[in-house]
Image 1 (cartoon, helix red, strand yellow):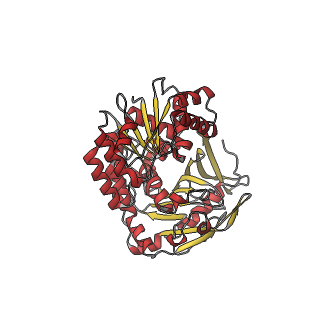
Image 2: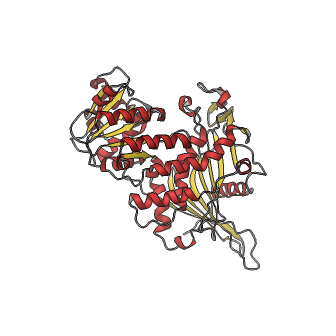
Image 3: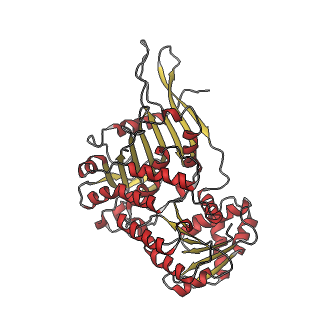
Length: 479
């Protein structure tokens, strides 16, 4: 296990909100010993004492219930190196030390090539690892160029292209539920499953992230990486093992099987929108175009929806809907697997047999199964729901992610060809949107999103939204 971690971009929001609390969780769980060393590298003209004070402040603010002695141990393990990441001398100074080092690039992706080159030229110790946050490139050509550079400089096994969604407990339970349960695996196919919704709707608006978000938008920020990764886990064939080679190979197979959208498909099966002024809870939300730091001329979307199909034996005929939006009425973060309805109901039954829906809650984490049962009146159908609470994970997503990096387990990181295939899937959408073939719709902040559009896809998505509303209403108690 590597005991040295260097973070470039060590005073940024990612480090403060996620990486430092993750390190504290690792320490509290006994995964980090007294020999662990943290080096923060950034442009601020600080010394190590000032950085330790900043680390302590951020852990107090974002570290939750982490014990005070644990927070102190992480702060005491830290030192600071003022560094210009474009300067090879500064980069070499930051990683100087004995033994292998894990280098976390908490930086804008545009800086990855110059920093990786500087790391290579500085002579990374054998066994070192480099961590790259998403997005991996800005488009397919950029991802291919970045991968070519990385292949020339760093062994693939030393690269961790991380996506913290893959480290979420419920995300991993998608695999466990379908692969380890005989009741599910035989029906995990298009014969029984009509549609899969992979949804990340949030009430959160821009919240000061214009500098990043306005150059990216919802499609690149969420769909191209996080939601496509969830698609892979839902749709992949059972791997021989959960080792990195078998698991990654099956994920790439899924992405390769995605049927590329034509221009007509993009117009019919995708949507984009941005929010107007509105109110969420007790807060008035300005229009996205009026948010500080936003350039309205970019026409950046805050809502994206894409329908995909897979050309494979298992999934022919199943619709996969990927959707994300900001400043919406309610948080909905889940994978919803909607089964086909039964072919026949006994005579004399009143009411409708709604499709069974298996829901993997992502945030909060949980599991629910929507069923149809008999109500209090004889021969009357009524919706039922079975729910299960997940045990709190030992580590949060970023804690699990960092542990995999330090121990050298790349199974839940993203291989270079996988990153490229994800861009391939969405390239037709990006091209059509850039040409304005799909209108940029609008929706009030605090609403359910853009108004339903009859011609979108096959119209089925509107019905599943209705089912979700049904799932949120009180249900008949079940055993």
